[in-house]
Length: 530
Image (cartoon, rainbow, N blue to C red; front, side):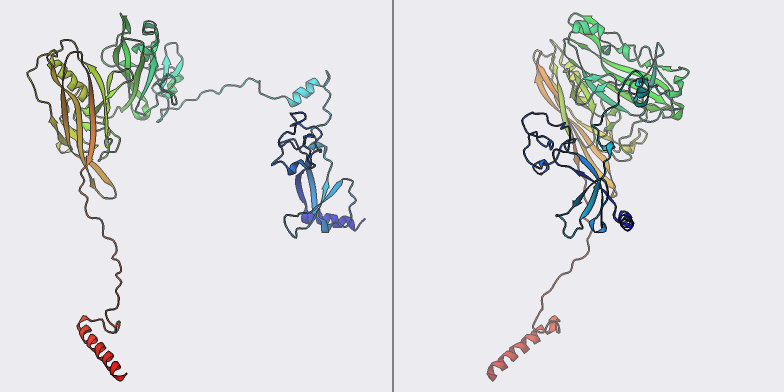
């Protein structure tokens, strides 16, 4: 016995392994996956209705709990001379890997591995102690964290507001949620992130929604709203009021079958001064009249301007210096605009993006007895976006003080006629084609886009009263860069075949004739000898 014990200890030190193996069907006392009496449940290795002796051989896997897991302590069989352990043992032979030593495994009777033990008895005496030992915290009240505020706004932070009752909130910039097109009023406006969001609102009952729906009223976007200069102002509750730019908009009013003064566009302008915070907030509106229950399209814009920026003449860059694809094309009257159609059928405008060919439009209706001059002015105003630019910026960082940074726009208008009103017909512009020619200048490795010229070409059509006319605006960009010759590559190797019989010993062209004569004489002499 004394000689066996050191041998066992030596084997335990050299080759002790702990293995988790699964037992066959029937080892599990309670079969938790046997859900269909009389039918073999798939992958339920303990189901007595499965007739196979070893269920693990016919199933791809065993469901959890359908086979018993044994913890085995194994040694190489050649290390064991005699076993006197009181626990069950098994000899494991590996048939998949040749010349693998057999294992002698001991299966300890660990009661902690068995969940099907007799549970504790719960009575009035031990109820409190067991509850205290095993209690959880799922229903315990969670202390809310105390909000902390930074000393200044960072890019992307929501702009904090303070309502009239003193409730802390954020400045809202409604936006569509996910793939939907309907407005969600929970979207916050984020500091220094210029952008426009567009979404739709449902006007199901015009008579009710006109006066009760706050989203249609301009006052809901500035009244009783104050913006915190910096986030730490939330402690002393000091804020700046949102001012209205221009005339104070009227409230929606129901006049017959029309709801007037409905908000179509909201523009917030935030003036900031670095880490000192927000200096001023203003808002402007575009209103329209709604004549029936419909889907209303609203747009919300957030603009952020530095207080240290120079005056009104400063222009937002569209590149530095060359234009960047997707940014607005600059003119002396602002960004070049493209006529677009809103979801409610009204006409609107969006910036022309450099390098993006596009075409869009919207319909207008000719009024009764409308004069031709008024109709033409209305069409020109819609096609141009309300302004008549004379010059376009050649670079994206052009300034109004440098004439070299601008090029004149070529206009091709329609011919004028002596028409009076729409009864006899008016010749009006219905199509505007904005053609922009540009080139790439500078280094070949980092070219800059420069506008060389722009032409506004109108196409006209004769219309009469009550006609529905479709106006279109098209923007096209043409690259007229004159490419230089491609950089020369390394010279290639030209292979050459031997010039004559005596190559490579004689390659000079001057001796080729002599070599040919020698060859003929040699062949002739050979023939005479034969």
